[in-house]
Amino acid sequence: MAKEPGRVLKPFNSSSGPDIISPVKPGTALLQAKENTSTCAQPERKQWCLQDFDIGRPLGKGKFGNVYLAREKSTKYVVAIKVLFKSQLQKAGVEHQLRREIEIQSHLSHPHILRLFQYFHDKTRVYLVLEYAPKGELYKELMKNTRFDEKRTATYMYQMTSALLYCHSKKVIHRDIKPENLLLGLTGDLKIADFGWSVHAPSSRRTTLCGTLDYLPPEMIEGKLHDEKVDLWSLGVLCYEFLVGKPPFEAETNSDTYRRITKVDLQFPPYVSHPARNLISMLLKHDPSQRITLEKVLEHPWIKENQRPAAP
Ligand code: AK6
Image 1 (cartoon, rainbow, N blue to C red):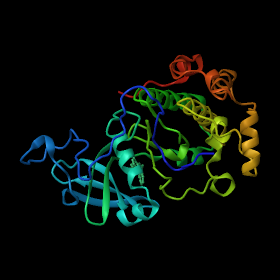
Image 2: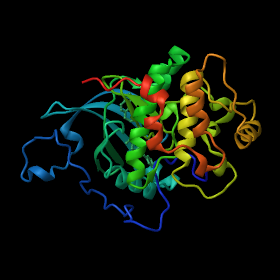
Image 3: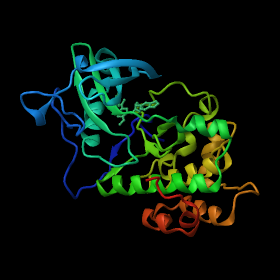
Image 4: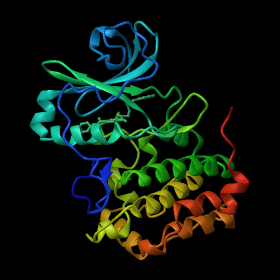
């Protein structure tokens, strides 16, 4: 069982390689958005503050605060601003987790990972300046469509896989891949959005039945050591859910879900094509070392034949 279910980005436990997790001093400018051209004394070191933005409509509510659409005044650059209350972060004892997440995010820049441009804070709040994903939440699209066709699913799978390859190359494992954590960019491209602590707007789906157990791999349920291969399992669950409209091991109770996961009790509705079943089955292997690699997912015939290249 996951000890900290909501935490999104985890460092990949590895004794080798540089440690990218180091404390961040509050107020440190972690990232300079290229788009920011506002005049200031040190053009490369502009630190944003709330006065630099016009704040728009709320985009979502969360446990520690809300997200708003916002526009940087001088550049008119549109972003999302997440407002977190320091008192609530303190009460929940998650400040160091937030800092660590900010530190990890500051090292990530990929077309399919939602950008954290910068953060700033005042006496009572911490503000995260995030990329705005205009087409909104993917799980809503899934609910609207019930399920996605194979072309759309393969396209999302390709984008997810390239984002995860990038994360794993930086020794970051995601561990919380599910439709609720994905957003859609202007061209309908997928963005891993890292809702952090499942602080996004309440989702009606699944929470009543089994919480978020559906995406947990056997090694985490069984309390074993786990590594970046957990993301391969979640990718398999995600692919199934896109094609079928519900996750593969869904059950009435948590313990039934656990049982189905540890047995890898995988069944496909008749409409799922055999090449798609093949890929899902190669991701949903009980033994992490037997799972197909991310490199091979990109080269899988079903992905190659069905994924639509990114719009120019
Ligand atoms: C919403 C949209 C954009 C943006 C990189 C909090 C945390 C304790 C994040 C976070 C990084 C950190 C955190 C959250 C996110 C989101 C939706 C995604 O809260 N961390 C407390 C510890 C850690 O991303 N990401 O929250 S916000 C956004 C919408 C809605 C429609 N389009 N575009």
